Length: 196
Image 1 (cartoon, rainbow, N blue to C red):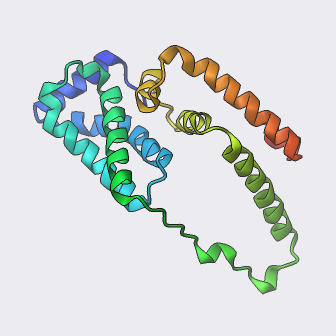
Image 2: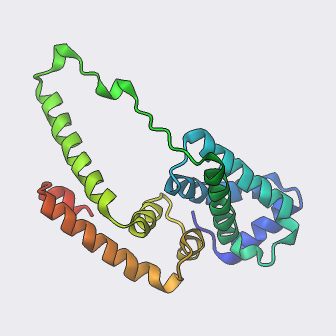
């Protein structure tokens, strides 16, 4: 859930005063945003957890010094992005990992309609992922953030991506139009394209 500035400021004040429920409400409201930022930086699960924990620790350390407590979501997004960049700079390597269970098929169920349906869905999903992967990085990051449930506010997206609030809607529209065109060109069934 995205909080109104006055609600966010109220929770920050409560958390600064030691109110555990206020702190938990902040975590509930902005935890998804922090995780989305770590996904945008393609961090491994453990590294993403470290960034999330460090981001919340930074808030705890600075909660009394926030210039505008109502903008705590933007502050958290900026802090998380900086922590991701710091961690990425330290790592400077990529490790590709696949779950080998995804590659195994049960030989007893190779010709069942259920398997055929799953294979078709997997094929469609892969084509959609491939189309999504050809979008420019800014579009991919923006659409990933907007797919969060609950969706972050435009102010939080602005802070996470470093883009003006007023350009988020038009950019989103252009990115979706581009993705729809890529999906149509790839021959993915029209039902998938309609859901975009």
